[in-house]
Every structure is written in C-alpha cells, then in structure tokens.
Image (cartoon, rainbow, N blue to C red; front, side, top):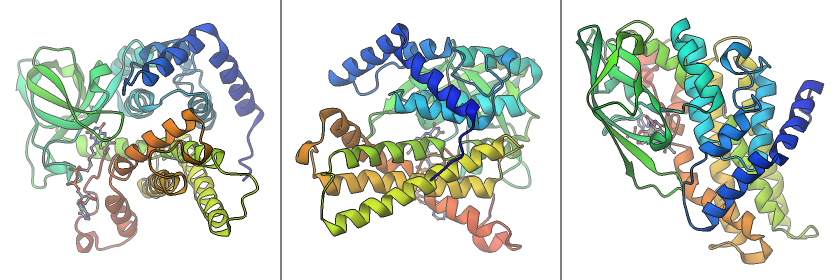
Length: 394
Ligand SMILES: Cc1cc2nc3c(=O)[nH]c(=O)nc-3n(C[C@H](O)[C@H](O)[C@H](O)COP(=O)(O)OP(=O)(O)OC[C@H]3O[C@@H](n4cnc5c(N)ncnc54)[C@H](O)[C@@H]3O)c2cc1C
C-alpha cells in the first residue's frame, strides 16, 4: 500500500533514525532492554523520553512556543511510528502527549497551555487519564467522584481505577461531578490534578499485560480554580472531544504491524502451507487497513476536531486487528513461543502482545461501544439504540 509519503515525512524519519543512534538515546534504549531482560515488567521509560524530547521530537506537531516543531499531525505520526519501530515503548507518550497534551492544546486556557504544554513536550512532566471508577466504565456519565467548592478552589474526592502509568505521571486529567442536572451528562467537570498533592494515594491493580493498572484515591485533594478545564458542569462535551482524540487508532495500528512483522519473521520464506499463506494475506490486509484508518484519523486532526464516528471506526478496526494478530501469532508459533525458530526478541514481543491482547478491545472504548457509536450515528432515533453519546472511554 502506498501512503504517498511526503519529502518532509521522509526527512523526519531519517532524522529519527539518526537520533535513535545518538549515545543518550541508544544508552536509554539499552537500559530499558536490560531491565526487561532481567524480568522488570514496566521499566521507567522517562529517561528515554527525555533524551528523545531533547530533539523536540516528542510532541512534534505542537507549536514551537509549546516545545514542538509545528509540523503537521501526519508528520508527527511518522515520527512516532519511527520511534516505536526503533524500540520506544509508547504508552506514556500516548497518554501525556497524544491524549492529555493534544486535549490541552485544543481546549485548555492560554494559561493552562503555557503552564503544562512545554513541560509535557520536554518530558519534565508526564500526564495520565483518570476517568474510570469501580462500577463505572463504559457508562462514564454515571461517574461518582466529586469536586466541591472550597474557597477559591475545589476539593476532589473519589476513586479512579484502571488508569495506566499514574505511578510515573505528575498530573492526571480527571473527570468528576460538580453538580447534578436533568440528565447524567450535566454537572460533570474536568480537572488537571497534581498527582503529588496531599490526599492523592496511588496503587496498582494486577494486570495480565506488562503494564499494570493503577488505582488512584482522591481524598479531599485541593486544586485551584485554574485546574478546571472549560466551564464548571459542562465537561461532558469536552470529554467527548477528548475521547475522540484517544481513538485515532495510531497506537493500536502500530502494535498490529509490530506483531504481524514479528510473526512473519519466524516463518520459512518458502512455506508451501496454503492455509498459512492465506492467513498471512488476510492479516496483512487487515494490518494495512488499520494503518490507513489511523492515518486518516490523524489527517482529520489537522483539519479540526476529529469526527467521533470515524474515530470509532478507526479504534474498532485497529484494536480488533491488533488483538487478532496477537492471537494468530500464538496459533502459528505455539504456546511459549521460541518454537519454529523465532528469535528471542521477537518471541518476547509476541509473548507480551498475547497478554496485552485482551485489553485492547476494552481500552479507549470497548468494541461493543464503538459499534454502538457507529450504528447510531446518523440514526434519528438514538433512544432506540440505548442512548448514543454515552461515553465509552479509555
Ligand atoms: C489496557 C487498558 C487501559 C486503560 N486505561 C485507562 C486509563 O488510562 N484511564 C481510565 O480512566 N481508564 C482506563 N481503562 C479503563 C477502560 O476505560 C474501561 O475498562 C472501559 O471503559 C470499560 O469499562 P469496564 O471495564 O468497567 O467494563 P464495562 O463498562 O462494565 O463493560 C463490560 C462489557 O460490557 C459491554 N457493554 C457495556 N455497556 C454496553 C452496552 N450499552 N451495550 C453493549 N455492550 C456493553 C462492554 O463493551 C464490555 O465488553 C483502561 C482499560 C484497559 C483495558
């Protein structure tokens, strides 16, 4: 498939490959590889990120005043694709830059942008997303965490679960209730919470995947009025914009491609197994389509807010494909991998992918919720489909 790469994208990819060879970045990548080989499941990626961010490549699409390079979203996606190909684990970058940072760029006040964006672009600060609560996942508008007025600020209380990377993050984009209204969508507000503040307790929830889930308790955490994003009680419309940003599908399509390539690396080039060749073709086409859908979402981002329906389509196909490829790898190479000549590094990638697979079609909005969003778009009786707009989320 020809994605018609521009000269600028090719130039950026070459620069990234160069940066990946510089001693600070190479050293940080080697440290990560050593930690993982020693059995550490979630090594600290921040030194690597800071070494990359020193080249202004971490948030390349952001304006220069905020630590970016002002390149297009497609060019920035090419940078991330090349970094991931070079071995950069992307989850903390996705959360800090591609979700919280992009959202701040779109919806933050000038003061919030000036305060947080340069720090996120340089790797001085990292951010995570705190939406899900015990018993509140797909139906996010039923959230129960609260923010109550306290002088010129607020106090936040509640429990947030299943976030990722909170332990390595400094700020959390947090959805809470500041009031009630006629519908459950009213009275929701978004805050940026300092995760080092008094009253914040962070713990982990065991996960099958390498990345552990977090549990964040907020016990009367004091924030200033400047921590509020948008208007009080009107966070739902902001949330739906932020949820679309999470669903470009770029991260899932990169996983699908990585796992597909690792699977092929262990196959004999001259295999005459027709059934296997048919699967190679079928999954290859799905991986190509995943990349195309993700790049389509990203090119939309450059033109304005992402259309929630096309974001849902991209999220659905990219996450389902990545999951299927991870499971297919296990069928092809057998349990425990290492069978049929997989190199140890490829075997490790596929083993971790198999464990990550189940979460992909839940995170950032479950597949069922994505199908519901697509099915109800353009349908003039959303009530028949059980309330389109209920926000399936990260
Ligand atoms: C890898 C991973 C990363 C995550 N990262 C974060 C994060 O950073 N921050 C954060 O806040 N949360 C995060 N989450 C949590 C995630 O948003 C929730 O898991 C998700 O919203 C689903 O919520 P739930 O687990 O409570 O499942 P539920 O909402 O209880 O859903 C259970 C099942 O029922 C289905 N279902 C629910 N409602 C309907 C319906 N109306 N119609 C049809 N089917 C339905 C769902 O599709 C799903 O299959 C993450 C989850 C995963 C797996």
